[in-house]
Length: 401
Image (cartoon, rainbow, N blue to C red; front, side, top):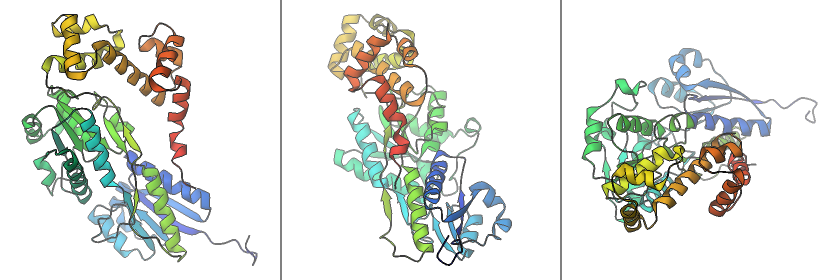
């Protein structure tokens, strides 16, 4: 209760953001976290697509604030007409100012570094359609590659102004020009995609036409949308954009606006968390076809208690010759690569599932959980139990007070 005996009137805030994508859902989580902490809002959520199809009903909204991702004509008119305080998280500094955004410059840097460290010297950028944020992300990637004297091949589809969305049923919308572009690229090549939707499309296309991922084409997305990244073969590596913090900061800025308090300097840039490495880039780029084939076989068959002799038999050479080729091109051995892939698989299972550690030990080919735990601690620097705890606690660590 306030001094005059009346409860302070809460601000009424509308959130219009897509719930179909992981990025949008994380934005909403950050916004609602701020609202929950402050306890000064009554907030209402309307899915972006539903709002776009019901703009007449949406126009009746008469609240104090609005946080939206406006990227179509229907919502654009509503956003312009709204008289309260508002933030567009899809702004491009033309019609609407950018208040807070992902640090795309940093995304470009870590994408370039990620590919370079894995031996890729050919680079490309994939986007189906011309949008502000996609073009900006492309230029950030190109600028970062200058440090490595790398050249980036841009897909021609990125300049299609009338093709900003991907087919919902990707297999009914395969574009021969995309396939021709991928096949024309020098291999091996690291392809940075505009976001996970585009990476999902490209991964499925390459897999359907027998283009090796990541041996020929390594694919990296943005958003770490697990509903997309984990449902392709192979799973897609992606940059975690810290969307929860972007949403939190947007809510904080809107609250400052509604309370008529001094505003910070815009835009506020939010650094990405990291690259979540999955199989689509988990590779060392090599030009030797035998080594590339051996690496692919190790990744696809590691669950079957793989041995070095199995790899040598698959690629049709002796174990000694295979060892020599690995030493020449990778400065490691086939056994070391098998153990590395096993350990990466173990990390993924510990991070993303609740499978007991004893079962994980058996799944990846260790005779006892104790032997697995010692090997894991030697390689990773902590026990499997400690690793699982730290990885699964990360969302809480990203919260802001």
